Length: 136
Image (cartoon, rainbow, N blue to C red):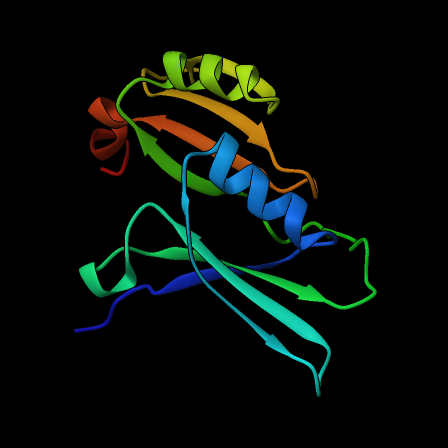
């Protein structure tokens, strides 16, 4: 059986990104490694260990590259939350940036919100009680 393991995003400041995903989004730093020969560092963050079936985010820092053109192909990461309203309040209190306040999607009932990470990547928060219904 196949399993989604991780999504990789390139970041311009690894420490800043780790702080955002751990302190603002509530994830854990699971592991980190450096490759001096090829000048990059990887950090994996998530809500649980990959060994338990959890998908995680791989933060890739290419040494000396401080910014990337995000392009138009990538959309967002999606995270299910028990209460997106409380989560958004906590994100703002922790210094995070909400780019779309929590509420129903246009023309629908699924409640969502959007957060932006320090590199400009979008993170969609989806109210878990409606997340599965939105997939059908």
